[in-house]
Length: 427
Length: 162
Image 1 (spheres, each protein chain N blue to C red):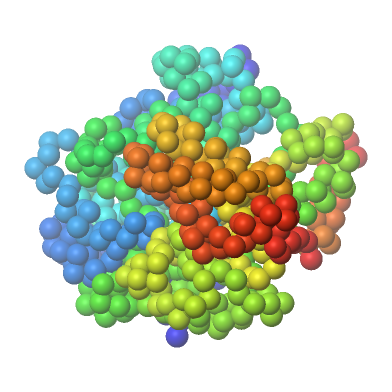
Image 2: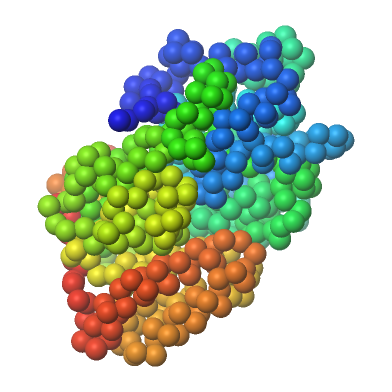
């Protein structure tokens, strides 16, 4: 069963226009919130829905909002994290481009709950169309009085600004995002203090993912209980999964949490490309450990994927078939993290580059047996020793691939070539 | 002045959207980049003057990101996504195919007529429509050899002076 809630209208090319969105109920939840619901009750509603952050960490959204100090005399801010750049992930872009009013409405609802009057949407620089669509939609929302001064005659004011990034993966990490938004280099900050207490410009700030915020209008309209009965007990609601790689029908699929990995790949995705055998799945974006085919029945919810030995992450399911060299895959991912390390923490800055060079050496037939242990040693020295999760993320593919495919590494070193050659051509 | 009066106006207007003016650095860099296709040291200085910031603040931010080249590139800047989902469907072949087609010895080079620059970049967030490339502002997805041929032919015919 596919439950389309967030993506119900995304295939309609007119949905990004306010007339179309409003005719389908956009901003009804926003009006209800402003007219009828007190901020504290709204936070309670979102807590009760059980919705957890869709950016990767899975932290309960309502609890995060609850950390914002209510009595603080400082202004409060909302930042919508639209810096989608975890390899494999392209779900937020669908919402930003095709249903921007849903994103705006969700941002407005969150702003009201935390009593913020200024919201930013931080969109990765390359998403030019998404930024244009969001800006046009915000302009329309101002014209109709859904944003700006004295919204629905309530005395509540809210401004919304589109802020474009400059092409840096690290800015999807919330403290780096805040530095970038402040005009500094996008390096991470030590937590605590957490952004909810001391975030943008030193003020209380909530940073939420696009998908998380986009669920809010539906939760307000249909109730916390309705959302909570979707999915599993601890992972409520629906989730967007970006299914990519070696599948017949790649795409973004919205399904209830707990939907099986097998059904996603074989039913939604139509099975493995060219009917090859499945080799491995990366279930939650490039930063999550690989799962071998024996884990194919894993339900896709936060808890079950951890039990299977990986993480749900951003819900980016990357499918890899039998004719793929695992060292080559790991080298690709290592290159990414070496390129995207912000350079603040030594273990990550030096370690990611070092791991990439060793993997490159093995992939090109110049590796030695000691290299395998050096890789594990490096990963071990990065993990847990950096300010932000990028370091841990970089260690994951290395540790996970060696653990599950050590034989392939050994073959590579002994024979100075791939066990299976990855020679993927354009069609 | 390198930045046009319109660009300067846009930068000043952007600054008003933020509680602190320093936040306008990224928007200003985007304005400059859109107007010129690159952002030079001289433009850093002009942005700093406009916003009443130190030039080093602008340079520090600009140099952190991949989005703001310091020198001009080809009219069509082709970024081929090299990351996992695209790589599994032929991204490497896509960039060598483009190189051969455009007669470029190495990635990063520009064709002698200054029309095309080809580079490989990290994930562009279009993984379910791999392989893909971005040319200037636009995404080109689900690429095949045939599609690439068509896209390049169209861009060549659209180029001014032809």
